[in-house]
Length: 265
Image 1 (cartoon, one colour):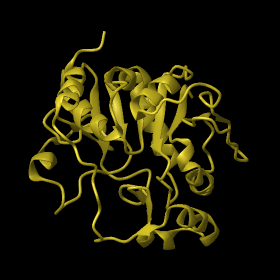
Image 2 (image 1 turned 30 degrees about the horizontal axis):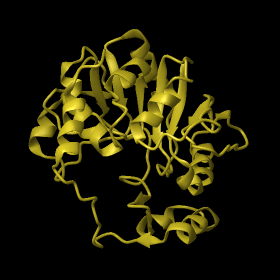
Image 3 (image 1 turned 90 degrees about the horizontal axis):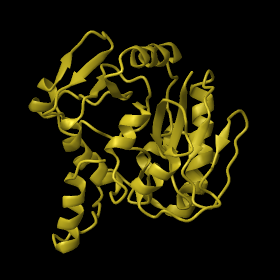
Image 4 (image 1 turned 180 degrees about the horizontal axis):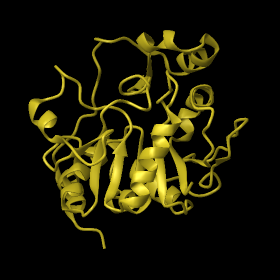
């Protein structure tokens, strides 16, 4: 297959890698694509995987989107399976369904991104977003209309590589990428889809928040996998106060916003 995995990470989250690949190997035994990790200086290997860390000996790219763009320069496959490092799988992956969706994308060049985790949750998803996901010619998928919130997301999904590159802006954080690229995606030819039922299953939002492990998720994994992570970064429980970075709307903020709105030449 003309597809590679891109694992978005950095050296500070090296404790995520063993659990991630342990769960990937356990729940997706048919997995056979090369994996590119966005490390900064570290090299990582895991038995049974072709793992590549092409940025390990180069300069440090501190901004999330810039690191992804640099990593993508080393990936020549037409499609990208994207994941964050704390998306530790908790259930078997239906490899046949993944291959079927991949085949759709190969035939339909307008398919830019397919999120493989079901995003529509009855009772939690706003009504406007439910109506913004409509039936299409692919029975396993919703077509995401242009008014859907977080139409672009960092959840586990398959990307057309060229579409991901078009949407990324080197100065943006992951949060700004999701919000601002959702707006930018309205002006591109490619279409965005969600699965009707999750194919890749992992804890909502990942196992880490604000640099700490969600202790509520930890009973889903082997103790030896999670203890090094908890020891390194501590833990948080559901419902505990979570601090968000303060965003000051000064000159730098509006300059960043202006740059995010510019077309990419």
